[in-house]
Image (cartoon, rainbow, N blue to C red; front, side, top):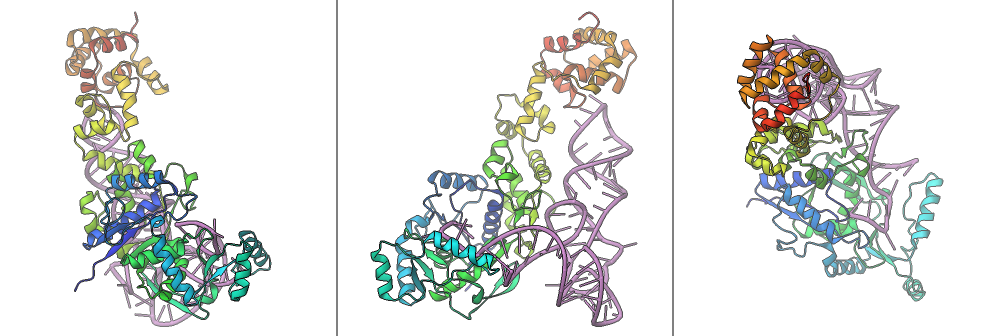
Length: 462
RNA sequence: GUCCCCAUCGUCUAGAGGCCUAGGACACAUCCCUUUCACGGAUGUAACCGGGGUUCGAAUCCCCGUGGGGACGCCA
């Protein structure tokens, strides 16, 4: 009997999908696909204040755009439905009951203010801020008295003293934690909803997840979750903690690093395949350096090569994959991507000068005869050629029409110029720039009148 | 403060004691191709955080520093 791998992505719908989350989702997805297992999407929306249905929908849309389809989850269903934690309250309540009955959890009547003060005091005393255990040994009557005062308790997990939690992390190897370093933590909020440590661990176990892949920031959370699962006699999944994705300043990726949400990259015109190729190599070493088609990625995902160190996101590398992806697209696909009304000929003209759709806009203006103002280099080229040259050029254009070869032939005979001395002034006069797409097809796309006007504008009698 | 994680070119990484004169990719530079840019080809600059061990031999193992990060929340 072969053991099926089951991975998952469990975002909380409190914001848009970010690069870091997308990467762990990708890794989890690829791992499942590589081994023919299942990939689950679970929505962790127990924080009613911050969770938003719109975020959830956006999250799923971005995931689908990236091609990270799930085998179980919202809108798909599955044996462990429902897949939104906000709908799993009844199940959690059952487990809370078991824990409470077994004396493994107890109601805590401390208020948020009291707790904050307590932590502050401990910190000042140079001690680790941990729950002091105030409510751990309350008698039945004491609890009743507090409830009668209208206090609504949270539920705390009673951390077993002297326990040693060991597990082998998929990426970090053997780990060992002592329960002595962990204070009793809240598993049910005052409003009755389940807290992260609890529902996250419990759902992974109960949904049959075998490989939990998440950010490094969860490594020290793992022993808490292990204790919980042990207390409930639920099967422990395996855990793997990948190094965090950081920005240019070395700090974990956050809003202040600019556009790091998948939605923003998408809106700017980045290809999902480019994003995927880049993400695949951040904190992970594939066995191929070059471009990978999305369908080939599972075969080249190597879980044993997931990185422990944090990885820095740099847009220059993403840009490289974007170019690689663009190169592999047909002109028709490119045209759709640009979202323009432009002709296929125009797309073919500018495709090597465009990394994002916005890059095509100036070239469309050039073709219309509206080039950008000349820079210093361009001014020099125009001056060096001289007005006579453009007189001759306009004349030649009259004879040649949009045939650049013919145009330059005539011009060469008439002015004696050749090579760069011949082409550069033409290019600059026509496009306003020293660099750009091929001149011959560009001239064909320009209306004869526009081309004439451009050349004339630098001639003697313009 | 307590506990935990991490550390190879500017960046992403290969490297699991001799194959390392530390390899590849991106970026950068130069050259070739080319009317320009891009593409492609060639070449180059560039790294094992520091100090101690262990060993015939250490980027690789151990210890101590240093630096960065995380957890200790009624956020996830």
